[in-house]
Image 1 (cartoon, rainbow, N blue to C red):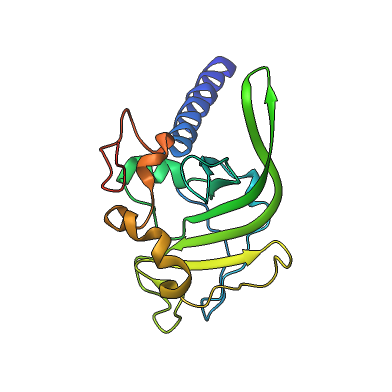
Image 2: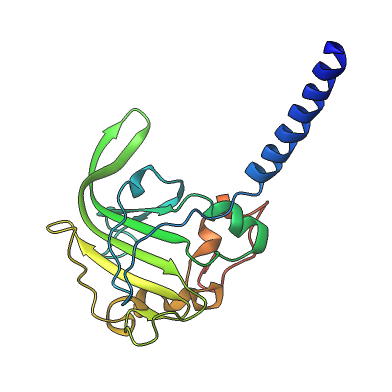
Length: 198
């Protein structure tokens, strides 16, 4: 009788583990509370420990000038998996772009640049349901926010049109996100983006 019970227990464990494995493989975005009932967005705590979509090195004075900012883009847990499954970010997914100054030095690996002092953080919350239509920072399927490193508790963006639209306009056809620049979102090569001149 003990052997039969042991076999049954082993079978139950195997089924349970299989179920857990399947659920883990189908990760969905974990709910992150970053906005209140009016749509006011706050900077999420611990975002710098989230998965990273990718990073940008920018030279604001033109392509032949030195890099003067690094933009590191984080995504709430489960966001990458849901995008790879459906080709879009699921509602509730949060993106944070951390913009920092850079330090640079000629190292043995080449002329290196790395993140230094934080400057600002941009936050986007996916919302295809237009949950806060009276809030000027919830437009085009996203909630938008901007925080200055001088006071991370204060959201300083005024509206989507005034603060966010210009920079994201080239990526309008890909849900306002430069998704082709993030290999982690794609199996193989992403399709060529309209904003990419190469």
